[in-house]
Image (cartoon, rainbow, N blue to C red; front, side):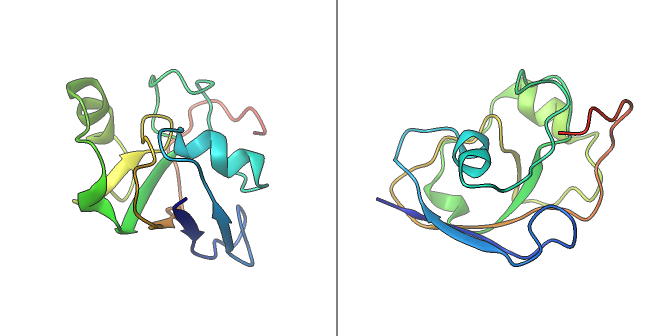
Length: 112
């Protein structure tokens, strides 16, 4: 069972977090279940970029993003080569180190 290591984020996960996740699950679902407050304004429908994360370790173990995710990521704040939308990221068999970017582009804050 892979470990998910979330690096500290001032608002979303101040202490950072480490938890086990089942392979084949969606990252945002696992993170939210463990108390990591990743924003998700579109309710995980791959229609915004508020759940944008950067995969600092383990990126090569993930399935490639699809065209819709790539198009949305182009609009994300702080886009990096290893950026993904956590609502589309399927946990693989390797540990992941995740960084939540400092800012998101959220047209309407829904207090998630």
